[in-house]
Image (cartoon, rainbow, N blue to C red):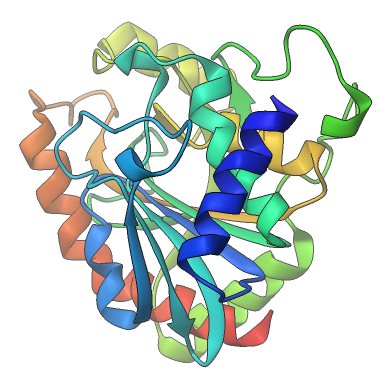
Length: 269
């Protein structure tokens, strides 16, 4: 895989000389954060060696380089998912390429179903931890050049970044919940019994992404922070039929608040 990583990174560098230290991955319905970016270069995934193209509405599949709050960043406008049939290696490949480009910090967003009875649709939830029910992306032969064989995950989400974004949310008067994210394969939305189970094992929200990227990022020493938009509720008595369109619309309504948080955070890290 090292050869593929270098080929992708070399192509990207040939298209853009910006050297970002912060990477961003945007989830369903959150692609318009790009309005906060002074864009210098835009590269479709399909043009980048070994990148794969998202198939899900709301995930454009574009790599953007530019500045946010005067800081150089690289942004994945959309991501690919395990349920699309891609391998864990393909899903997490952009993280390894970011590392090759010099990225040290990673901010992620996603849409998720809330199971905490204190949550409401449209809330933002800061991930403090996760429960991984997806295949681990590090399974398989190990190359020491790719990072540790047994990476520590006791602080998967960076405590300093969590402190920074908490301060920002208080200053901006943006309600920011905190909780544990349960990662599942999808693509089905959860049954009522599954919601109860995920809540019982300690989850506050459930979704179909983010954790594979976090695991690989931590393996290779990238500091991470992630925020979920609670787009629906998996709480007994409040569960309603769900569509992807509804998820996208709820995520879009939360985007201005998330953009404020990420923009200020980027200025601090």
